[in-house]
Image 1 (cartoon, helix red, strand yellow):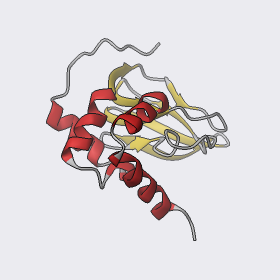
Image 2 (tube, helix red, strand yellow; image 1 turned 135 degrees about the horizontal axis):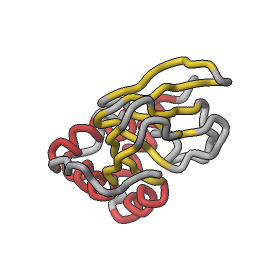
Image 3 (tube, rainbow, N blue to C red; image 1 turned 45 degrees about the vertical axis):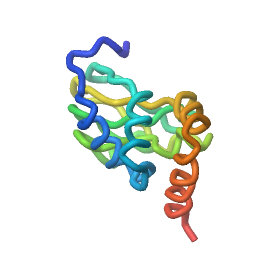
Image 4 (cartoon, rainbow, N blue to C red; image 1 turned 180 degrees about the horizontal axis):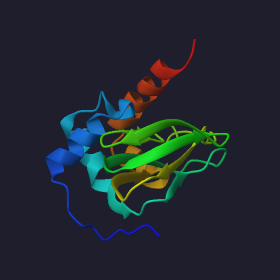
Length: 142
């Protein structure tokens, strides 16, 4: 089970820097990133924890702070993710199904931002909305 009991707390600046690496938030100001960081939970995950399941609805963005996970499609490993990597950035904005499964391969410490919290934040800080939409549009195939 996911533990919300933190083995450590990230400093505010470290959390902001991790969120800045996510392309969805690349154009956000430091103040906007600070607001995002306030709704991002820090969690400990055991090895073998399924972060996403291919085909399922995505409900959160996960930024790996420490640890590793394997990415699989149709049961075949296609990638590995580790410290500084992120998954699910599109899931917090759209309702598209997950394109891959992701499972931790060792104990992992991560930041998690749920769609519900993120949408509430966008209503509270509307300047984030346009930046996120611009980022999504830039990533869409022509």
